[in-house]
Length: 582
View 1: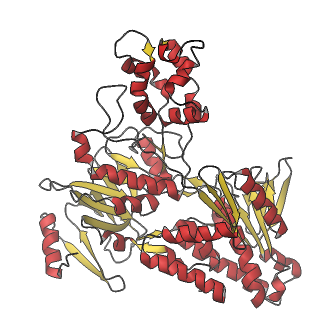
View 2 (view 1 turned 180 degrees about the horizontal axis):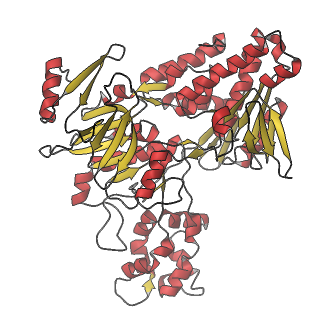
View 3 (view 1 turned 135 degrees about the vertical axis):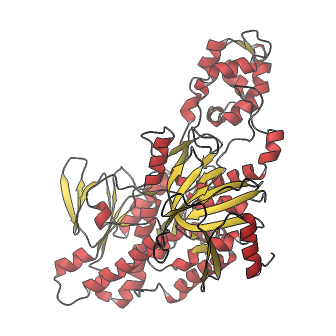
């Protein structure tokens, strides 16, 4: 990669932005980075604007977020014809599936983070990163409003504006408190690296507090009562990690605490790990019961105070649970900037931004959303059934033959994936077999259906539609898909590769996004993991734990983090977890 001198950096900056009136250069000793701050074209007393230069032929792509979706997009973007600017308050990528391991010292926080500048400096492209938070999206004027999260020593210049040609929204989501009183003030969350570090300090603090000589037995038990709210993968894995930490490490340092520690897992539904196979759910519940982890299903939290959690049982009875530390892991909510943007584009009363199958935000032309902040609004077959019939009926006879149906089946399945799922679930070879069910007694190749019979045959297809889960796996695939679209944007404009436009002429530019599920893990502690892989393949035990080690090591974004994670696991096997409070 070409190395620029300081003079060349200045020259390049002024060449790219000839209207710069000021340039403040900040050096960071530890990171060795260079940050350029523009004060040109002031639009208010505290804001500066970064315009898209008219003479610059490159289209500007602004990426909001450095999580799974945003980082996957940046890693896979290869077209140098874009001017890419990344805005995020977090200047690193975090391998979030290992956050529960950070909470108890199994893995160190530094081992699962990679500086975003390390990722973009390896790209042979024009990419800049701004450590700031986007607080407003102006889709009408193609601008985003940002605020630096380093407010000191900026002479009041905390806010700036960035213009864009394309906007990629990958800001993730926040923890959902469901507006339950006391959750925000008294519970810990597990969404960010900072959350995991805070939980780790709190766990150690609880043990140290309980060791003080002036406490009663009852008070010690309360302090060492750890409550996890939410029986999903994150809550279950944290409960398992905490149990192992207490029984494998803390009892050696504080032999008297084992009988005082209690771990309670609260879940509002009937079972924990509800998104997993029933065999995994049953195994996890039985394993936790054997190990003394109190799993309470059907318990809905209604209030949290500084010392007690109030829950409402199925019977309507309200009970209180004293606790020393509570971790809230019950799902995701919408960030305020996303909520404001949804109102701007007419998406009211939604949990996440609605996009089409190409990840483009509904109601916009040049804004894409991916990851936890968005959900794909898959179009229903029955909404386009008349257009599909008319497109397939090439001879305009008013009926659809088996031959005509076969000619468009690939486009139908590509545009509407629920059709393909329905055929597979019904064990039908093609759409003609489905149409034959409406024409019983008629030979397969002699089928002729009118519009009403065609509607009847496909009336149940949309029942196969499901929203994608808010997981790292989905976000990473969406980022890679969108980057591939941007890489081939110009070629696909000339030669579209997507399915037929049933409501119009020609074809779509790209094939729509398709998620491929590669399986999911649920670590259950004691060197045992539950694995659910494609093909209804379920494995539980020590062999799945080693599979989990290999997959999570291989999925690290760099060799640096890969080696650090492996060394942390090795250190834990030899020396145990670190129980010091740092």
